[in-house]
Image 1 (cartoon, rainbow, N blue to C red):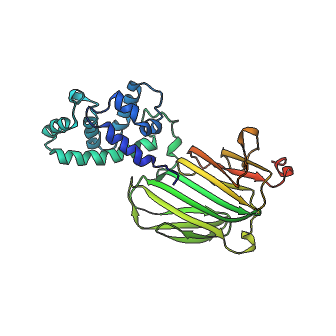
Image 2: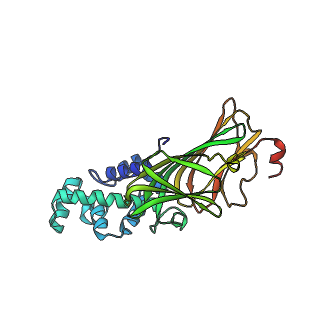
Image 3: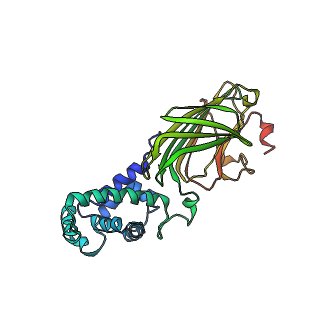
Amino acid sequence: MYGINQYEDLISDLVYLRKDAGFTPRRLREAMTFLEITGSSGDTYEAVKTRLVSAIQGLPSKRDTAVLMMAMALGGDYFNIPLLKHRREHYGDIAGLKPDTIADHESSAINELAIYLLSARYAQSALPSGVPTIHNVAIHECIQVTTLVRDRLWVETREIYRTIPLIDGVEYFEISSDIPAIVTPVSAVVVRSETVSSGLKHRFYFDKPLQRGKLVELSFIMKPDGTRDSELILKEETRAFHLPTMKSYMEVLFLGDKPKLIWHYAGLPVFERPGNPVRERLLDLGNGSSVGVEWNDQFGGLYSGIAWAWALAESSKK
């Protein structure tokens, strides 16, 4: 999945930030994923510390808040205790808990904090207010879409979704399409497709309900169903990002006939896409057959994609 594991890397950073003396400037400099997710790159240590404390104190569980403030040496007497082992002992004396039990609580609390940081719903979040909270069911860590076009006709599209559920008990993911297609799962799911007024909806059922914070991967292949309606002369590949999406990558491979002009766009309403092929958005096949684009932080049901013109006269109509 093109090397993106931000959720797992974020948890690793949080584990790292609690060790030894806890949340220190030296450790913070090495927690690159944490800095990226919280929008803290370039901020002072004190500013980032304030942001982290804001997130920890905003957690729903008071126990999670207390154990993380202790583990990272962010409050009270813990700031002056240089080893995690000794902080646990001190906390255990107060809470009446053994160090092993405290360590288990820390792991659970770190997982919750990672989700909270990704959702950016805490008071000191560096992201624009409300942006990632359009939907609260899940966050896409990464989406990858690869489409194959041969002599202008759509051949297939392969899609991979790495998703973090934000609630327990999610039984399926649903993806809608306005073109006739056969969907074949690659990951271990069962797909059920249903015709609706605007096209098809495809529901991907997992073998058991998903757990909050447990990363899941869904992958599948879409191909024409053999009807005349599915023989599409493609001029665009696009997705609407209804769920907050941290990273997304789209690639289009052209076999045979090649477009005269290719460009990319992002964050457009449905009736404004595919935008205009202005110079800074142009893509070049060069001597190859494929183009690709990567985006960060897509959200709000807006469209991003790659568009092309088979003849230059087509682009002048945009």
